[in-house]
Length: 112
Image (cartoon, rainbow, N blue to C red; front, side, top):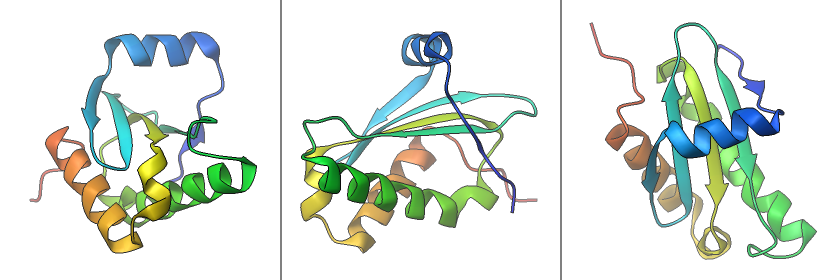
């Protein structure tokens, strides 16, 4: 399983928000910028999602779904921004929505 580094630099966030492909699904907004060798991930939940416990749960849900799909994903930079609806959505639907968004952004590797 390949590991994803964290995106920490504000300039990198700004560049990704401006230039990356994005997809809006029910539970999150996905930003993707394809890279050659580097794989980075950031999971964000703002105060609109709720208090600290709710935000942490939303981020855990997104990370869990992402980790299940990460072996099939292309190298690149990913930002997942949680929406408030994620807290009232069953895990299977979160998984389906996120994978659908990743497929629409063409994040999955081609099968041989």
